[in-house]
Length: 151
Image (cartoon, rainbow, N blue to C red):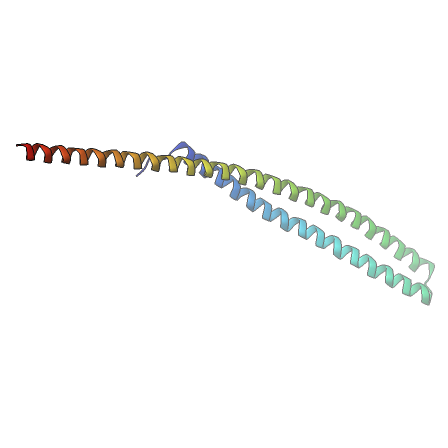
């Protein structure tokens, strides 16, 4: 079994970090999508509720009903504002997660490049060794034949 090189250990660690970053990125993408969908639902609900108020106002609405609608719309506006902030934070976390994943991926690619280079160098050394051994065998056979023909 070939001996494990330090570069192999670095590659394994970098691959693990990249995989972890990819999993976190997936979770962050889901969280960002969820936050955005909640914001969209709240915004649509506010729009529908406001349209309902407009319709009631055309038909005539009591002062208490109007105040209730206004209070509820203010509450919805607060919830929308909070959800908008949550969606923005989720987007920032997502961008940070993308940056982290890219950084880990670049590191892994660098280690892979170094490993490929080391492998090519090892193959070149092995090819030179095999060529030298082949040349030595051919030279020995030549001298053995020459000595045999000279005797």
